[in-house]
Image (cartoon, rainbow, N blue to C red; front, top):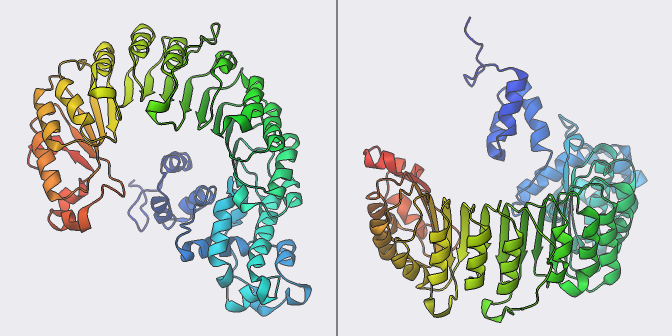
Length: 524
């Protein structure tokens, strides 16, 4: 018997199959389209769409739709927060009844995003009468209606939601601590992100209470840019209260975050990923990270210009060692970077660097022989001497993915001219970002003897028809290359959409990923 088809000519599928399909769809517009297939699909998709809603806050209509939907779910408790007693039963205060209890599905509360959505649409919720009746009523304090709406929304979420993720930003201080700490809303919290740049009394009080409310946080991101040791210690208390933290990211300045770093010692048995940005990390503390037996990924990034990075000669952390899979070191002391690479262990698969010295090269070729993915920023290479970079590339006999980037004109061109002779035969994907010329890239591809399969380009120039035609002429002659990826940004976009007017519809569909095998066969 043939399968029953719905109006979209799609077969009715078992519930388990539908669940598996939807778990792998990340595009919200695609999921939204699937809502209208049938009731079964709708019931499966609504919880996915409303678990982590992300309104297009630059569009008032998107923000208004989100907030009005939640407001339609308000019970008498939330309505009492919004309206005065005499206004509660007004005929103008009703919104269309919701099809679902949408707040039940919420898993991530991104407070600053929600606050921005309210800021965009608070004057136009429902009818004009609806918005005007929200407390307070005095015109001179109307912006405070935003706070009233946020209080009611938070009341709804803490009453109905069971969050696994929370995002806080001191710029948008939370409206009320009591609302956040009631019920079991945060009992299942596993992900927390805190952006702290200014005084926020309510958020500060919530941070103090979180260690008693949630102890199962697995992923913690802290951006801490206030000169306040008390608040830093409160954040450290959150870290110590967790049972098993897996990933930790810290962005800030060292003299303000030392207590936060010290608190990591409580998580040495569980940490798998650590990222430090902008902090002046005391490398003597590598002993602490060396105790993290499960640590697999380590990123340490500062924002000093490379010529200002001190080459410290201190020998540190003699007893510490890692078993890393991924390591990123940007603008770090060369001697200390070399030591971290030696500590990283022989299991290292991915390495990112922007400072390369003979000592670093020696450490890589001694300890990192299993590296398959290499990312090199060659900006400001002294005297355009790429001899050490070539030693790394040529010495990694298992290298399959290489990314080269530079913001300095001419750097990549010079490296491309000398690189073909050292590339390992295992290389399959080459990624070139920003300052390079197509002519030098063409000469490189002509001289390259390894069987490259994929090429990614991120040009620092607008892409027009002439650019695309020239690069395809170069790339299609390298018969091993199967795909060309064009990575576009605001700076390197399509010139006035001219390219789309001059290309066939079929070629437009393959603009960002060019299937070269089909192109060679004449299908494009």
